[in-house]
Amino acid sequence: MKPYIITIISFILLLTSCISEKKIIRKYYTLEIPEDTYNIAPDTLNLIPGKCEIGRVNINPVYEKNQIVNRNKSHEITYYMYHQWAVRPDEAIREILNEYMQNKRLFENVSTRFSRSIPDYRFETSVNGLEIVEIDKSFLAHVSLDFVLILNTSDSILIRHQADRTEPLKKKDMNLFALEVSNILFEELEIFTELIRGKEEIFYSSEW
View (spheres, rainbow, N blue to C red):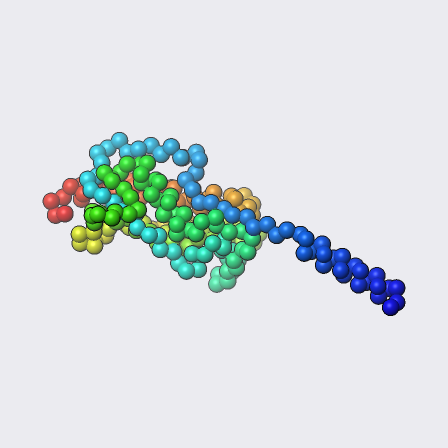
């Protein structure tokens, strides 16, 4: 075999060995109540009587996977292979909702599950958008959600809050993206609880 052929084959084998030995590292990101707002001030007003169940979070199938979604065109998305949510978004967001409502002390009793009795109220959430958006080398966090408080006895909607927000990121950084999504969730929860307090009279109405 000619020397130059042996050299080429040796180089290819060496290159293949280096590639195979290189570790592929997956990075995982969490959704959680931001640290600077962790100590949520409990509501000092009267507790709303009754039990409130934190229902399952319904997420658009496009976003329900562990892979983080990137959108760089109006109808085109890609999934990051090595940047993923540590916990599926539906479970992570539900945990945020439960933690927030527990600490806020808005209702007499809040839980993700009531085994022995039907709760008075049901807090349902839908997420229609959860993605990092690239536009002309700019990066944004996009979250579209719908909070609904339902009266279980009649299955009627008492209060609804919808939000569709796109917030800029300083740079393309998945940790910043996860933090911004967490901030958006927290801020919209604050708005939703204010809406509940603003219509407090309906919880004491004899109609219910």
